[in-house]
Amino acid sequence: MRVNPWLKELIERAEKKGIDPKGFKVIIQVDPTKQEEIKVVLRRMGVRVLGQVTGFIQADVPDVATLEKISKIEGVINISYDVPVYPMAVEVDQFFKQVGILADPILSQLKPHDLEALGLKVKPTAIMPKIGEAILTPKIPFGVPPVITRRGVEWTLVTETRKIIEAPEDFKISPRTKVAVIDSGLSPHPAMRKFFHQVVMTIDLPMDTMGHGQWCSTCAFGDPAPSRYGKFIPVASASKLLHVKVFSAFGPCSAFQVMRAMEYAAKWGAKVISMSLGGPLQGSVTQDPECVLLDNLTERYGCIFVVAAGNEGPDEWTIASPGAALKALTVGSYSWKYGDVAVFSSRGPQGEWYKEHKDVFESDYAKYRDILIKPDVLAPGGGPVKEGQVVDQIVAGVTGWYDGFYDFAADGFEMMRGTSMATPHVAGLVAWLVDRGKVRTVDDIKNVMRRAGKDIARGWGLIRKSYF
Image (cartoon, helix red, strand yellow):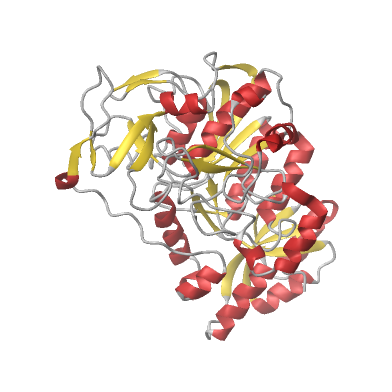
């Protein structure tokens, strides 16, 4: 049966628990030349076709017996589960992950140890800060009004963290370089004073009603703006910006929604695509549908996908998908305060599935060598190096319910931390490098960074403009 090993394990674990898997969504990888024929066959079988991208079909499968029939259709290559995908900001990620699991017809019935074995370890979500816990932040730049924050939090503005990667002072990107962000939406904002193209792929208001997408977009590609934290300056400022909204205010999305967004951004002409999101790796990097599509789109369109590594550190083998993809530029989080990889930043050498399938890992490593090993680079994302240290966070523009989460003021700027925050730092710098003709492909970037060294926590180390 041509079924992804991750999906096989999910079904086996469900059946051992006496769960009869019914009514679940799958992603069917197909021969693109036979895609339309296969859709006709699926409908004749009574399978509801929900969507498609090149080489993949999303379908609603009534039961396991139907899954076996689908696997025998000529032209079907692999069948994967349509897993939940979530943002990679600490606090936000665990909340969205839990919502995704609870909404899933099979995952919601499994025990925590089964979920962990599938790469879905659930950690406690953050407790909302109480006003009584607030203190004046010890970091108050000259001329900036005092900022109230939750106890144990120290912040800095993207204006400062961009200096760590040597982001250029001439941060404008010309209209010839199109860029994209796939996230929770984008709104007009003091740090986003431009026309942007937005596509909504979820049931929600068109603007960012949560805050994560706004943070990532303004960090990477926004505009200079005044704030009570000081003057905000993004890593780069783009003239041609696409935002594809896949997350709603309180909900995760599915792997297939992300795949639709990836293909849309690539076809739109985005040269750099920032993705501060992820989910469990399903099988090897040549079996996981998001990884396969990312690599295919990179080859077909020459785009550069900059993807979060995940926030499951300090454990090893915790890289998320699609960050695990061979052609992804995968980003871990660097602590601006402590000067090293953040404790929560996911470690390599790869995703959770490989941990239990070392023979496949060794085989893939022999074939792909160090492009299989993740993460690739680090960038400022905040976060202490070890538990118990001051929580260092980074401020950028936000809208939605996260505005005021830490500083108790809905003023359009808020602090976050995570590999989500590191990713747009890299996306902005890469877009500038592409625009200035210093790099053309993701391989160009990896070849330059390869000289910086390699380990399972840091990848090739902190990315810097001077390397290029």
